[in-house]
Image (tube, rainbow, N blue to C red; front, side):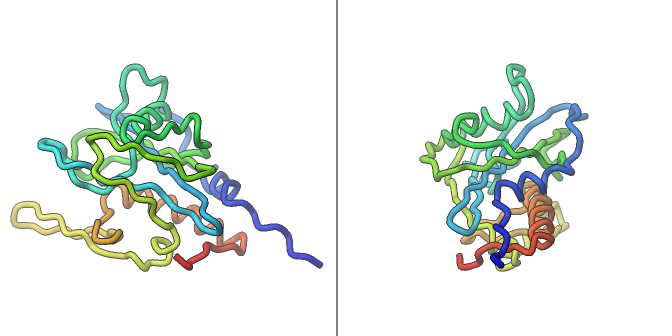
Length: 207
């Protein structure tokens, strides 16, 4: 008797997001949205990270991040914010090129003022050509498996006056992913990997 077909990445991701928080207005002085963009490559998944350009007065200057930014008055909703900002920052039209599968919990950064951020999750059918704006120094497609299995675990140390605070991080070829981006990805990995384990499936860790 043949084995049943493996559940697709698209279906597993979609199902991992069904228990997300209800769509509701964000209670913060400022609101923003970010895009967690996934790409299926053979038997594995990659995700898009950007390294922000260094800019004076930007609390996230030089950080590793997900594409996104503040909501504009013209944005019909926060998904539109994530899609507009992604197009502006990396030249990727998510409305035309990707499928939005759901969203994750709302977040507030540990610094950067009274702002709430809503993450949306997208899946691409093919690797796109990116066109970076002057706000983005680098864009990287990062295999997801080494992040899931702990191979990239690291610690980020934040100096505040005479205090040093340590935060969990991932080391991506010398670039540290920490803070809000880490928390968003960690939530997604927890949902996705838990569902994978229940489905008796797994990622290809050959990367």
